Image (cartoon, helix red, strand yellow):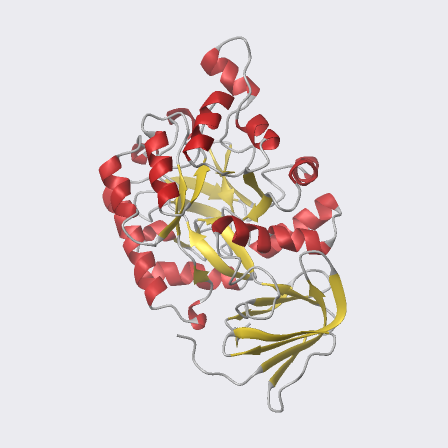
Length: 399
């Protein structure tokens, strides 16, 4: 329950809608919701005012795929660690996120779910970004696509395990490699629970993706990262060469995907190509951030603080054995990098970080855009797209 606060007026900024920019705009918030919007909305008599100082007023960012930040990982599985990650990402403009598992033992994943459930149920805006649900990402990865995740925690789908995950509404995004034994049963179970069903860390062929699609898959994790390619499928399947996840996603209008626009994972050309081919309704920005976000360069664990795999952060990205190991940036950085790479309208780029992920995750009726009746989750950006203020549920977070 959001505590009562005086009405909040945010003015002297450019409103960023999914399809346009409106200079000289004002947003009025009350009781945690947007109640007025536009160039001349009705203003309450007594209200707190924030001057956007000619910057941009955008919806809060929504992150579908995020592991940690501020020195903590969701797999640490303590309420304190969860709240630290939520607070860290709020500073970067994220107001809603989906804590994302790594590979790990059944006990480790159960503990992570328990900690996230505890924080979600006791959440208040002071804690940081809101938990909209958990993204069960590891452990169901292909053996040859584990990436920087702890290898010992990888396994094929176990029905008794994932049925327990789906016993309530906590898990809202569910990932599995499409080629694994039992993958289709997992996809069907997740789809029945209303999850966004995804394929990731996979070396799947087109035909395996088609079967996964029929079972409920509608999204692919971090495009071009830890996913099948014509070359990887030739190594697995021989000749004739086969199409894989990239081709299936590009050719299937109901499929969406995501990119890590941190400047290290994908070149500007690939980011621009993804937007050109998929459009703003099928492409999301994600951070895939690790615990190294907002931390100095050094050696960190990916996953649980005592059992996760080691990676090195140079302050810009994580690396493990020469391979990329998650990002170390917030969503504000991704917005700036995507805007620079594509030269798309800011309204389009912000949509990739807000409305599109909200739509794919099924929460767009409540968040993801500036709209009367939606939650007052708002970010004020400077003209250089740096976060000046993050407002969550109408509450202004301390800077």
